[in-house]
Image (cartoon, rainbow, N blue to C red; front, top):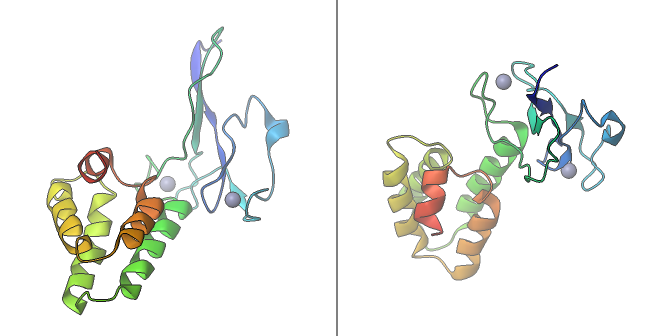
Length: 161
Ligand SMILES: [Zn+2]
Ligand SMILES: [Zn+2]
């Protein structure tokens, strides 16, 4: 018997966690999300690897919170909910006023970088912040709401310390 193991998670296409213990509590599974009606998945749509769920240690109750992972650790592709948020952020960029087309392009590229932890992340955050300074607070808040769950840890510390 294994002492500790990862369960499988069932998550809707919009990122709502339906069941983080698919193996232990299969009766909690749902075919569609009860929050938004989207289809639920337990495997990466790109490579079919199971989505890592709650970590079980035998004899210990699980109290740690579970959050949907942003990227598949097996193939590196963003999960559908990450993709949807990136798209939403890109769409928001296009709606901005008083921002030039060049700046919109930079902002869009910065968003792609700040969700990953790469050597470019710090630079991307700096550019992102600089352009957002020209917008109003509700816009800044809107970006935060969309991106807070998917930006890299490095970017999160720099953006919202
Ligand atoms: Zn949902
Ligand atoms: Zn994958």
